[in-house]
Length: 338
Length: 156
Image (cartoon, rainbow over all chains, first blue to last red; front, side, top):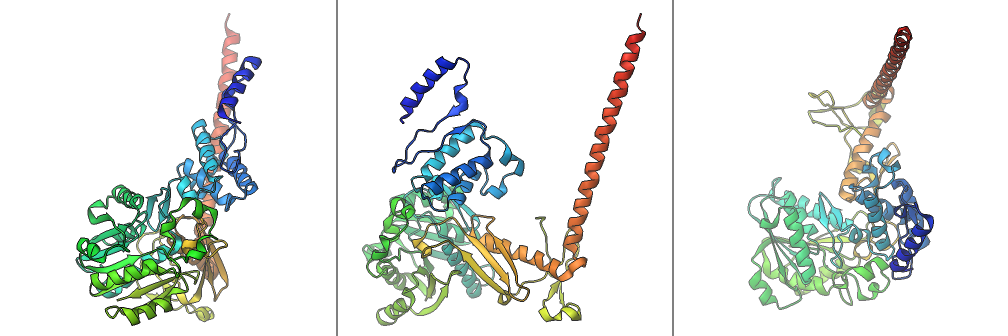
């Protein structure tokens, strides 16, 4: 039903019933791409009831993580990050009109399989809350471990306060998660972040401004697979390079979940036939850009480490393969080279 | 969960009957809200990260980031998905585990249990007092009303 039809129906009902308060009966008439319609609601719905109602509705329409999605969205409307953070009594109160409209609007977006992070337009990464905006790649929890690894390694090499004058290059910054996380932990760090997507460049800059880190971060719209000399002229030598580059194999792309396929930038995921096309370019750049004993930290696919090691040994004499670390799920790997 | 601060001064070994677990204990001093909690050895821990089904990493976009932490010597398992950051959930899981270990180790002597019981008792006393006050006020009002009527009936 279109909203025009609803309005008309509403006027008829009002005339017919005299004192009937229309505002107490709201039917959301927005349709999703697949034709899924939001459930009806009345003005007395409590936060708790809304969570259950939408969880059921998501389940009905095959939306993944139905309960979590509902909880995160409604908590967000109530000004909290998680439902745990909402006062118990608040959950049993009816939602205000504004809150109810907001919940229905956001949950309807989730019905299109839009990732929760894009629906609420934010997500957390380690200590930071970052703005999220499609189609810029949403940072994954595994990448939080990459940042932890980098910090741990830098402390080992340079001491507990990371030494003086530290410069870093991030390739493929996306929303700025890695760079901003590092800048947040290391005050003397200066970062140059690159991304081939203008949307990512803008979002990283926006997140840097929101966090007050804009003076320590330079973001450039550059493709690491482009002309190396042009790249080198724009980037000075750095102490380390970090990246969560696209590393999926092209053939893996088609079996990805709807949330990713429909909303996230495929260029942030697709690493070519062997998943190594961007990684290769990063390593070539690293061999020319790293200071003496500088390091590269990469998140890669589980099948990559031996191939990368071989690639470096055979074609990149300036680099030395140091270590592979597994993430918590023992799937993704983080590799280090110098 | 009340915030617990810890200051490391020195460690000492637990009583003989508990030597099996070989935990260094940490003494906390100074502020009265500090409790000595067992220090965790990462070797004693098995950690799992629940990401739902799927390949993980870039290939997955899920919001679930539940951390499951098992303390192998005691078999105690803690689950945590309180925050949207897996790093924070890992830290919180360890904090919760340390509290559970404190109770497990100390049993009836557990400082945590003692404080929780004290807190419950304080709340009960408070509630009793509030109810008593309400009752007093109600009775006072009744006497006022009674006087009021009495006064009115005396009017000519």
